[in-house]
Structures are given as C-alpha cells and as structure tokens.
Image 1: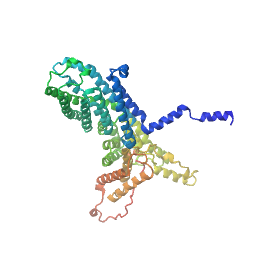
Image 2: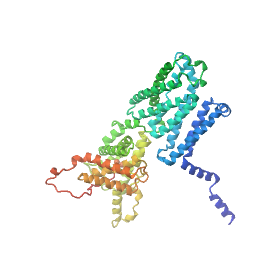
Image 3: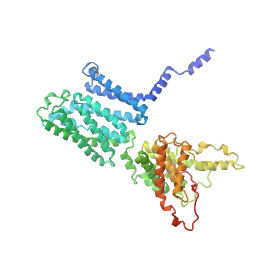
Image 4: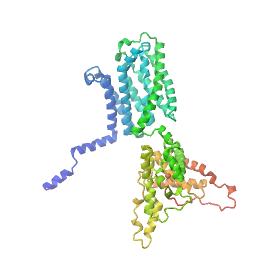
Length: 542
Ligand SMILES: [Fe+2]
Ligand SMILES: [Fe+2]
C-alpha cells in the first residue's frame, strides 16, 4: 500500500476522542449516566459543603469526612434505584430537562435551609426569646419544592425528588433525622393537594390543607424528641430549650409547621409562573388559563374560522374522553385540541369546514398549490404558538396532529392531471413528499389520540347519514388507517389504549350526532340504507 493511501485510511479512522465520545454515548444511552451523576453529584456535594460549613478542608479532613462516606453509601443506593427504574420501568424515568430542574430546585432548597440553620434561626431565636427554636425550624416551607415540582412534572418524579429532599434535610440535621420524615410527609401531601388545585386561588386552599397535616406531623416529631431539641450542635448552645415543657414545645411546633405548610403554598404560587415562563413548562394552571374562551387566539379563531373553531371544540371533547379512558392527561389533550388548527386563521376559506356557503377557492387551482396551502397550517400554527407563548407542550400537538400523513385528495388529483394526455408528465412523476405534512409523527399517547380524533371528527362531519353503525365503522376505519400507515409507530400507546380511545370517540360522536340519526318512525317513506360503508363528501384536509 502506498504512503498516500495509508495516510488516507488513517484519516478515515475515528480519532481517539471520537471513539471515547461513541463509548460514552453508548453508556449514556444505557444508564442515562450524565443526568444521574450530575443530579446526585451536585446534590451530594452541596449537602456536604454546607454541612462542613462551606469549607473543602473540613469536608476531607474534618468532622465532615465521615459524612462523605455516608453520602457515598446513599448515592450508591440511590444510583442502583435509578438504574433499576431506567431499565425496568423506562417510562418512569424523568426527561433530562426534568432531572435538571428537579436538581436545581432541591439544591436551592437545601442551600437555603442550611443557611437558615446557620444564621437565621440563631438571630430569630435571639429576638424572640419566649419562643422555642424548634418553632423556627418547623416554620420553614419544606413542602414548597415538592409543590412546585408537582405543578411541573409527573407524580412519580415528585416522589423521587421528595425522598431525596427529605433524606438530604435529615442528613443536614444529623440527630434530628425525624425532621426528614416531617419534610417527606409535608412534601407528599403538599404535592397531592396542589395537584387538585384547579385555579391559582385554590392553591391557597391546598396550602391550608398542607398546613393541617404538616402541623400534626410537627407536633408528633416534637413529642418524639421529648422536649429536647437535637439540632443544638449547629446552633448557639445558649438557646437550649430546657425551660420549655414537652407540651409547650409541641404546641409551638404544631403552630410553626402549620405556618410552614401554608408558606409553602405561597412560595409555590410565587415561583411557579416564573418557572413556567423561564423553563417553558405547561402546568395545569397555565392550561386552565389557555382553556378560557376569551384567549385572543380563540377569539380570532371564532371570528375568522368559525368552522375550524367548532371542529376544534369537538376534537377537544373526543380527546378529553379518550385521554380519561386511558388514564392520560385529559386537560392537556382538551386544551391542545382548541389550538391545534390555529394555523388556519390566516387562510380559513381554503379549509373545507369553513366553506359552507361559498365557492371553493381550490377550484381551478393547481393541486400542488392547494396542498401547499393546506399543509402550511401546521407551520403557521407553530409560529402563532410561539408568538402567543402557548408553550412547548401545545406546540408539539400542533406539529404532530397530522404526523407525516399525506394530503391524499390533492395527491390523487395531481396524479390524475399528470396522467392526462398532453400534460407532458406521468402519474409516477408526482412526488409524494410534496403532499406530506412536515410532522413529526405523534410521540405521546395524547398527541396520538389527537391525530386520530382530528380525522374522526372531520370524517364523521362529512358522513351523509351518521347512523351509529356508520360512525362506528368510520372510527374503526380511521384507526386502522393510522395503524397501517405508521402514523402511531413512534407514539407511546398500546393497542389496548387505542381500542379504549376508539370506544370513547364512538361514544362522544354518537352523542353529538344523535339528533341527526334517523329513528325508524322518522324513516317512513324514505329509502332504507342497508350499506354501512361510510358515505363521505370530499375531505380536503382538516
Ligand atoms: Fe390540522
Ligand atoms: Fe383539525
């Protein structure tokens, strides 16, 4: 082999760094190591740093060194848990963004708690001589991180972060580890109550409920401590509590923990809108605001594209029922449906649902141009979603509701035109790609449901005689078409869930069209339809 050929092969060989990168990516894919190591490394490091009074020297050589090994044991145990979850229950594993945000929230909370232990409690206890120091400990809004995280992510992830949070808090307090149980209980109930909050004002109610449970827990912990305060090692020894009886301390802790529980909801109420905006999260509270019919985009949709508005509301009902049937996020599915076709606002008259009493503008147009206009509503919708700050979650629905499907009506028209003699081209020369939506295909259960609901609504609307049998047959046909064409291939949805969603669609559509269904006594004198094959008008892509 010549010298130049040899050097050419050497050039093609991946460099050492590239090989390492590939190896790392392999590991990373298997274990999601980067996020796991990042999360635990950072939490463990900061917890240790604050425990050793922010000094690396103390950490390695001083009293903190034994804690280092405690954290190591804890980290290995939790890492095993993470690897187990990632491998056995990958659906439960948090997204990288959620892992980062959860870690950040925990770090902030732990650092603030430690700083408060070092400075604030001494100062407060010095000011309020008649009040036991334990009161100030329980006053801290320990449920706030879990409440904020519950508004941003799935309950399973909140449990994970809350356990970690409680362990770190217990660890910071050394002998007062029971406080960790108080943190865990307050976090769990806080997260549970806040998840039931339907408006921002009911967040306060969630705070009051959390306050009651936190208060009881504070009392129990104080009673378990038996009147002594086991965290004096980090505080001024002059603040010893011997002069307070168990009952007195218990009552103060009860009041402190109740106030802390309520404060948690105040902190969550303040931080959540900030995090929604900064980190592009779509919380249930934001969804409820978007669901209001006075949102400027929905008002414009009613005025400029009333047919699309009506279609979107029905798709919302279909998606909500189907998502409830499969245990999905029904609120997200319903609200996203309202906005899925907002891209039609600019050219409403080109879409079949808005053409009831007017000439079809597609008549006389080239099929390529017609398809381009129809397809453009997806990208137009994305632009409007960005301008009106609808958030990533709603934008995903807009982009994925047609997946990579084709505008087959205009594709067939283009093929027919091309096949005509004298056109100068052939039907095979028509590119499928020109008639495909940009996609991507639906990725989640909710977006998959919407893709099906969208087609079902459009098709059922165009049924000449929507009898129950025809509606059922139509839903069945659309679901099968979606499965056969690979529309649902990338979605995290099972066949059982698709069947449940189809049943929900049929139930809602039957309810909506019941007034149009002809009953035997109304059919007298009319020709009988025995054919259950759906009869449709031309569907030009809703
Ligand atoms: Fe659409
Ligand atoms: Fe639609």
